[in-house]
Picture 1 (tube, rainbow, N blue to C red):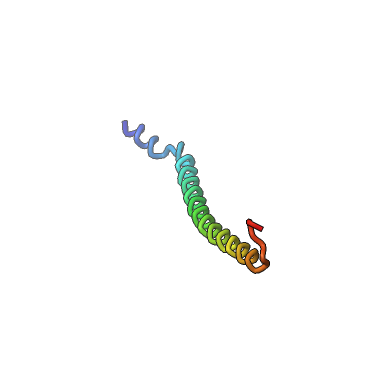
Picture 2 (cartoon, one colour):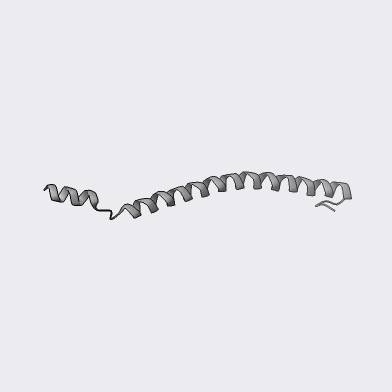
Length: 66
């Protein structure tokens, strides 16, 4: 029984799998965080661009009803 326990402690099968799971979880977490930051900034840029286009239409005298 003691020999079995010693062999079990020395066995490293599966350790690489645990490392890959942790690394993959970290990459997924970072991707989700980056997506959130990019999405928020993209919404801001799109809103500002839309407002600029509407302002240019008003300035140039154009519009949807013309």
